Length: 326
Image (cartoon, rainbow, N blue to C red):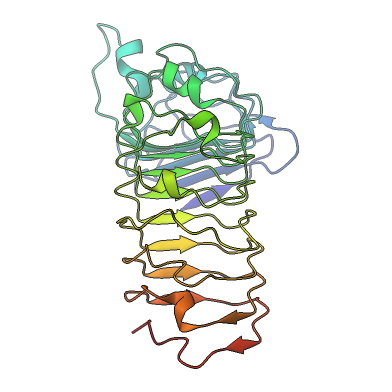
């Protein structure tokens, strides 16, 4: 692993020679404004084992056609002056071979697992079909103004993980065929108030992890949960679901194993509040205003292994309150 805070240092084609075992390379500039960094096209050619490459706080405006090792799996460009996704084609043509290959270039198999473009505050555009040939599992766009609709238009489909933390969105991205394989979705630190806005429910049939932490939710999305048959982890912490947890409208089967309701201003856990979560293994209720618990409050959680009640106002634990948690 090599971490460099370069400042205005120049990088040449021979800077990284001899580092053929290097797996992680971080180039960092921590300042309010990004710093210009020029990279020769072949400066990374000798890094045959490189798995993760990260640029933080650098502007690569004056670089182009940078060679990426075929071993690369994670690429990060944070806090840069990136304005549209099409710039990736100019910087790293290996990512988009079919769009940049010529009769003189040899096709190379470059499969990128994760692309992190977080906190590029000017990233607002994604041209039509710009990323249609990019094979990618995870895309992180935290703190950017890029809309989910723009991603659909870019041709970037078949994602398994999408993170849109702190992007200012007010509702869940619409369900489209291209997101049918999505397994994890992080929408934390946004302004979502009601998942059932306009009565339309986005459908993510393969979703296993969903985070809506630090939003403006005021009710437990029971109806939405019914559309997520594969969901196993749900984070609803730091919302406004209190003071009393809303009960489901009738029983239903769910595979949910982890539920985080921390910091939701909850004062009371009604009898059988979690009875519809028969497979739940972890329940996080810290940072609420719960004052008492009884056996009926936790009824139905026979598979529960972890229960967090820290930082509450608990004064009474009624006899047998753990009876239903073998």
